[in-house]
Image 1 (tube, rainbow, N blue to C red):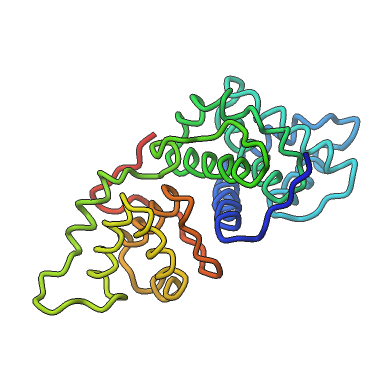
Image 2 (cartoon, one colour):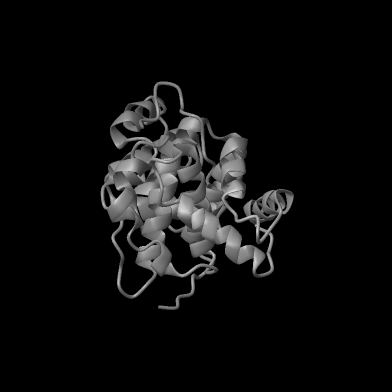
Amino acid sequence: MSMSFADGFRTLQAVRDLRVLVAQAPVEAQARIASGIPHGWMAPDQARAALKALTAGDRLADPIRSETISALQKAAALPHDDFPTFIFATLLVLEDVLNGATPVSEIEHHWATFRGHYRAAQAVERAAIAQAIRRVSLVQDAPISMPQSPADRTTASAAALKPLLEAKLSRRLTPAAETEPEAVAALLIKALSSPQAAQDAAELWRRHGADFLLSMPNIILAGFRHVYEAWDGFSPQGGPMIPLLDPPPGVEWPH
């Protein structure tokens, strides 16, 4: 089945998260992928250069691209062979699918087959993988097996974030303006459990996200990330990307 991804916020956010994590992948994982490309097609230094170009989002000519993607697809199906390499390959294959360069059929069974392994990854990796697979499945006619549980799709739980957001609530007699941390925290608390509040949070992010990136404490940004991860209706078209964050104080990202 052919498909086309609109350059909407959720697709762009999913691709951006994958790229950030790919850039942080261990050098050893990249070397392992490059070594899996048959030397009959490319010399080792060519294989490393091809993989580096692919991770940077550069275009590769066939058959170099074909052999590089083939090595990634193989590694993305071998979690017991080398786990960091498996995760690195999965991130890159999903990015290639989201960009429309690899057929959806290449990953249609990945969630059903490997979800237990994805759940063993770092929380930011697991959530990014789940978001990417879910994004693929939601924009095609016949959805593939995809993550349904918020525990799979979110970096941190609502239960962990809620008390930290509550600590930001206003203790003043006069109401806070909608862009002050107190008011934003109150909206995000509602958005943890309300799809309508999640849409309101998306609109607020669309209008003020660029300023929030510069001014808001990490727990507020973590709240926006959770709402994006939890609700498919969070789609602030034209808004800036939400950063991947270190855990805010009081939260440990789960595995």
